[in-house]
Image 1 (cartoon, one colour):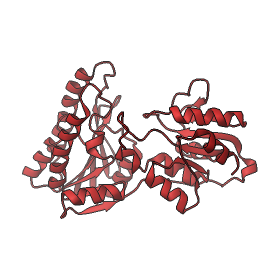
Image 2: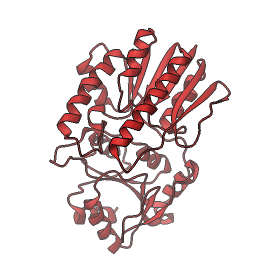
Image 3: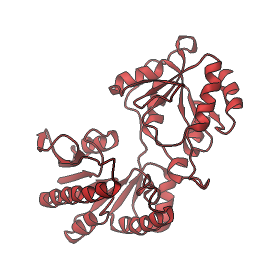
Image 4: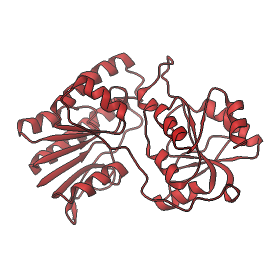
Length: 329
């Protein structure tokens, strides 16, 4: 069987995408199309042929970026169509021309599986504040429904997203595949850990309440380190992205890993993408054996942390009380 995996705006070695590529390569030859900022030549490794499609993100002009991204997405779809696969597996979605790939392969009668990394109606143009949220959300809901109707099956990272999709399309075949950690390290006893809290990955959300919490914890002797993102001014130190095994080991040396940030929009309404998120950084902390600090509003993670005794659930709006609770564990 010839299988196409296409990952919109995801780099070659994205963990979730690469797991799909590796798994599907056992069922046939895989062509893998992905976003790249430096590669332009296709190459083959075993049963997988890699097709990078160049695109340099314009961080200074959203208009120019969207124009450029449309060209990039069209190129990815052009490459995909030329390969004439028997099965198409889509990761994420095209931002500017989200339905074009569905229309193309629907006409070709090729079944499509869509892997939804995020809740599309919220994720669409999330950081573009120039467009009112209600316009973005309503437009995204309309094409999200069509994506669900044109998919032979859909994969989701959370059970909530499955329930929501089933409410739209009750006949949709679905599969829940959460993210997960790839390895584990020796779990260190409390006395062997650094008196330190780590934050893994990029920071996209408001951390004002977390800053208050960390200031309280610094007064109790804790250090704060970000891994793979810029430091919080005056509060933390930072180390760059680490190779996966080294990152897990580094997390394992800390007293706690923290997953807490604002999960509401500017009007105070909960953002479902965050309330029901299951990010890689959570599972990386699990396999490291490091206790996890999580805000109670991140409901899916908080439920697992409480159920499996993986750390502590806090209220980010009460930083002093949360700091006392953490310090007494």
